[in-house]
Every structure is written in structure tokens, then in C-alpha cells.
Image (cartoon, rainbow, N blue to C red; front, side, top):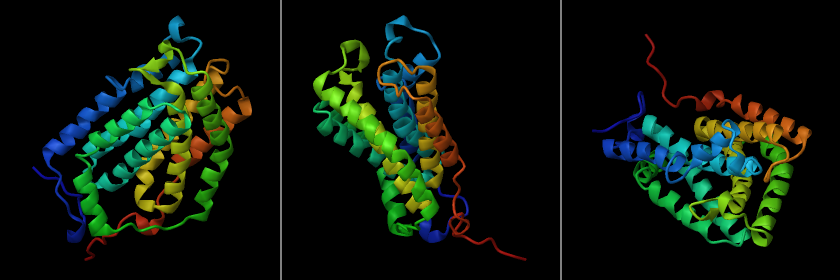
Length: 270
């Protein structure tokens, strides 16, 4: 079985086997439920649990990364295989920032998670490479959107620096880890990934749909978590920062493609 983008130009057509979409679909529960525990950690925002009552924000940062920056792109590809190239870029950013987190956090387990992300993404790669050859990487800088990563950078810098510093000097106890992976380096990686994806959003119209969804939901989730649980481990105890992050999430959610990037195929006229 093959899937092709509806209405796509012949040069941009590509085949995606059913098994590739099925595997990508299976990666959604793999990363968000077991063993990734993305949604499991996110649920501490909504289900009171005294065991994690003092570390809600730290749990949620792990949940946001694994659910919205890893599981969500896999689900996106399973439903919309014509978006393979942007999905592959989002997953690549996630894996790269996990490696950065492993180095700056002074811990090797996040690098293993990064490797698993790369291996998981192999079914997406053939379609992504085909799209890259057929369409090229057409960049179009939108100066107004460059304000988004600039606005996010100060909070992200401090958030990541605190996370990496804590990872090196005071690693989290076992209760704050997932499958032996400390959440602190991943929390730092989350901040770097969001800024990196906002840069992608400002330069590459093709990636807008999936990047917009992943980043807007991540920012909105973290902002609400900080506002609701300001005193928990890993939180940002600042109402202005939480409000600003929520506003940034809304701006990202409202970001659209430029008109000339909506479609490269003209419909026949009569």
C-alpha cells in the first residue's frame, strides 16, 4: 500500500508503505505511555499524587518533551505522511537537544534516549529523504517570526542553565527519574528544543503546521504548570514569566503559513 499527498505535483509524489505508518503510529504510545511515560508524567498536573506533589513541574517537563516533541510528530506522520520531512526535522531537533542535554547535564542516559529517538524515526526517513530531493529545502525568512525565538530565549536560557547545573550538582532522586533517566537534563533539553524549533518556524514555511502544534502545546502546557504549581521542583516561580510564556504559546498557535507557501500546485481553471 502506498500513500501520496493529495493533489501533489508528480515530482513531489512519494510512496509510504503501510508498515511505515503503522510503526510510526505505534511510536505514539511507545513514547507517550510505555516505556516513554510522556502522558504518564503529564497526568500529575490533573491527578493529585502525594508521591509527586513536590516535583510536578519536573515531571511535566519530561512529559512535555516525550509527548509533544517526540510522540506527536510520529502521530503526525502516521496521519499525514506527506509531512515526513518536517516531522523528521522536529525529531532530529529533539534527538540533538537530548545529546546536548547529556553533555551539559553531565549524564549519559539522555544520549541513550536520543539514540532511541533516532532509531524510532528510521521508518520516517525514506519519505523525508524523497521529499528533500523532490522539493528541496525552500527557506523564507519571516522577520516578524524571528521575534518569537528572541522572546523565548531569556527564559529558556535561565531554565536550561538551572536544569543543567542541578543535573551536575544535585541529580534528582530515583522517584524523579524515568527508567533510570534523570529528568533535569531533559528539562534543559526541552528549553533548547523549543527555541530551536521557533527558529525553524521563522525560516521554513513548510514546517509550520507540525512545528506550530508541537511548540504551542509545549509552551502552553509548561506555562499552565508553572502557574498552577509554582513551588514545585523544576518550576518557574514567576507569574509574569508564566503569563508571558502562555502569551507566546498563543502567538505560536496563531502563526500561519505565508500565502505563497500554502500550496505549490495550482488548481485547473475552467
